[in-house]
Length: 174
Image 1 (cartoon, rainbow, N blue to C red):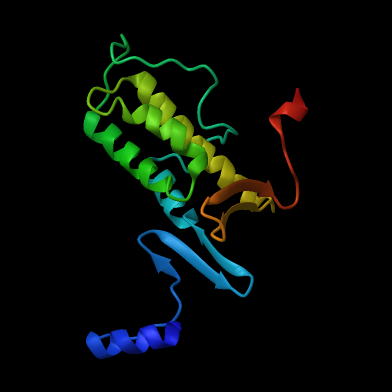
Image 2: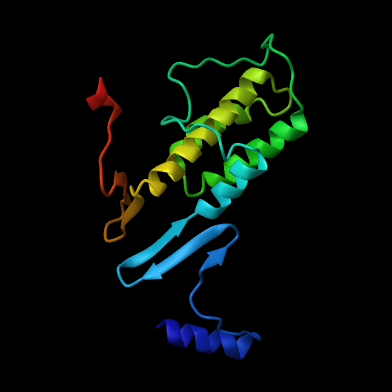
């Protein structure tokens, strides 16, 4: 079926088959027999380096529990251009990293007039991304997986994150 589609497209448009996709718009694609896997590890490392957080101490949550932010924060103002750039880079990471989506959405509200409090939370998200990279270096592999059941009218999306070598849970530590 794909061969027929490719042949029809080649007849209609000038095309070149360059093989399987490996990288596209900051997303790495690893295609194997057991499935296709996508990641943004390289992009995440670039962001950490760009914002000078590549040597920072890592943490295991993107945002503190119960954090309250306000537009009328009395804290010192920070450069909105710098903050906006940081938030936009983090937004792109949410394509593959839904675990940071809430935290990035939270700080996105303050892009026009950010304070040191807002920047501190943005940097915390970067430190959380660093944690993920540190786990990989320690030999733990984070796997993110989507399962779509298209047989029914209802789409059943199950998202799971697992550490292959070691499962860690904050609830078991308390």
